[in-house]
Each structure stands twice: as structure tokens, then as C-alpha cells.
Length: 256
Image (cartoon, rainbow, N blue to C red; front, top):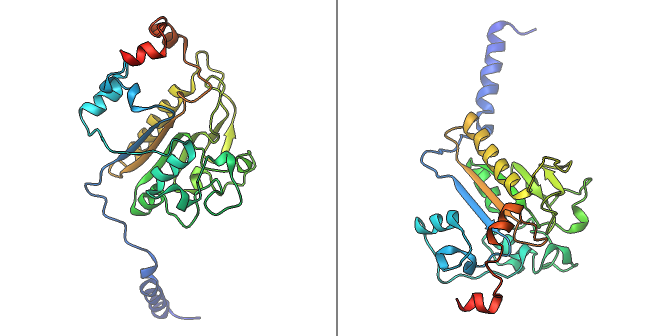
């Protein structure tokens, strides 16, 4: 049996020998939080800051204090636009030529982001950010969205540490099919429930949890609303607010 001196020597050798296995923590000083907000099936003409008669005060404030791009393009489809946004690459090159519901056995149309393409949350997580996603996903083949998986293309496998939302292209706004991280949860039965408000509350919860434990750690938050996608199920107070406003019809409203 080795004496104390020999044991100390072994311990010193081992700690020195393996010290390189523990990478240094990245310097997060001064790094900003990053928030993506995606509005489904909403065009720029629907915002008050572009002359719409629809009330969008929050978006108008963001526009007034930020940048408004005049030369930009989308793919006009859900999944491809999201794939571009989360990878920074052309959607054909990452496997999302069309919506994930129409996945085919072709490299550019498998209905999921290829593992050869890194996502922004993966890159930021490796840099030291916390990463959260809330809302619509629509980046996995529908055959892979059942409660039992497979989970390869769910948010937590694409760089997000937390997720709350729905995986499909759409959901009932009053009785949604929800996923929390990697498991399904019961449909909420709260009186007056609407999925849009639930998504906002959950996003705030994720940010508060982050700040309570890691106040100096930056986060990436991806919030993807689905309320303007069908089914069109607005809360009663919004229906009343706009009742009669567009009775003149689309053509007249467009000219105005």
C-alpha cells in the first residue's frame, strides 16, 4: 500500500494530467440577449407603422425604436422561412424545400433541418447562452411529432434548452396540443384560455428563471406565434373591438 507521500504524488500527477479536459468558461461580458419574434401569416401591410387600420401598438413601438428593412424576402411558407431564420442558410440546402408536412425522400425536402447545418441556438448555446423556444415549431416531419417521438428534430435536439409550444403547423387556439420540452402535456382548461397569452407567459417565465439563477448569462429567446394562422380563433374582446370595421370589404379597405 503506498504511503501518504506517494498518494499525494499520484493525485498531483492526475490533476495536472487531466486539467486540459475542463475547458475554460467563455467570457460573457457585455453580450446582449437575443430575441426572435415570428408572426405567422402576417404581412408588413398589417402593421400600423405601415399604414394599416389594425391596431398594432407594440410592433409600432419596436419599429419606431429599431430598423425597418425595405429589401427583404421570405419563402412565403412556414417551415422553409423558419429553417432560413434559424440557420442563416437557403432552405433548400438544409432540407426544407417545403413545409415539413410534405416531407419527401430527397435531400432538399426531408421536412427537417439537416444535422449538417448548425442552428443559431446551437451556436449560441456553445458560446455560453441559454436558449429558449416558445410557440410554433413546424420543423419536424409530422410522422416524428407523436408523443413517443422520435425526437431527433424537436427543439431540444436543435439547440434549445427549453421549449413550450406546439410542433405542428397549426393548433386549436383555445384547446391546443402542447409540448413541454420533450413531452406532451394536457390541454389547459383555464377559463378564458388562449394559446397566444400562454406563449407570452411562458416566455416571460423562462426569462425570469434565467435571471433568478444566472443574472449575467445572456439568452436567446425564439417566440413563434401561430394566432394569425388558421384556425382563426380570436378572443371575444378582439372580435368586438373590430366588429364592423371592415364591413366595406377587402377592395375598399385596400384602397383606403
